[in-house]
Length: 386
Figure (tube, rainbow, N blue to C red):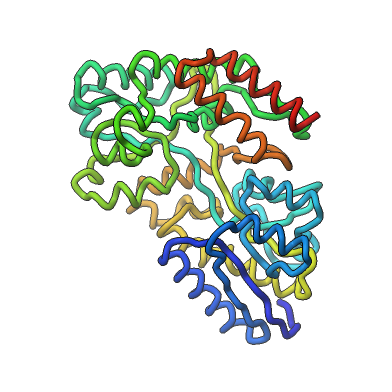
């Protein structure tokens, strides 16, 4: 434990009132148990990344702050974040308590530069009543997924069996199952146009072409959660953020369940997740105190509190009795065992910006999956990675 007298700042973006209240409670608890450390928690209301990046450049950033995995490599590669590894080695923290993919997401050049706050994997939400009425079973394979959607379509229960975003976010959750990837190991080459990736995108666009999938604008639902809650669709792929929205309509909530994403017959379980770290500025005047705060905000007691509204990053909590009473939430934490992170090196955001329009073009049948992914790969390699 740090013995220095320190005033440290903690920054995060605008979140729900419940989340901000929980964080303030945890900060207060931390201060009570660390009388030598005072914490000033600030919420950045808008343009979070831009403001943190500016502060880091001016060397007046908060001592500790949220870092989204998609821009973590950019910050880390520029030397903006504190290397936590020496502090971990001197403390009793065992990073093995976290899911491996989450620790890897916040490690740069062999140095740990953040501890995962939580994560949000894509899972399949489905309407149990619709499945029962159509005589469909919850799919475990890609073939079974198409079969289930076809049965729902044939039964005429809903406007469309499945709702999917126009930019086909589900593609990113399925490619890892099929042996695909977006970039190579060192992030120097885009691999989007691989046979595995083309097959994955074709699987989804073929279902779109056959009327098994619709994009939100086609059924007057802004996103998959609305499609399910309005019963315009029976299936949607979302993260944990979909649950509170579904729960707000009890008569629909009791019909909705969550399942792991189906896998190809010769593939393996996989999905993609979004995650955020607590990291510290490389220029903090109080690195030991910042580390103490970060470890408190990611410890087991906080993780249990966080489970009420998100997905904890600690894998041991999979067996916590809380999840016996919340089986839908358990599906999300279980997926941590096979989750890949939506992060593709220092240029993750630029890569995503080149990929999204091409996925949308494929979903709208404006390009074949091969054309779309070849275009994305060429743009990414020539405009970003060259």
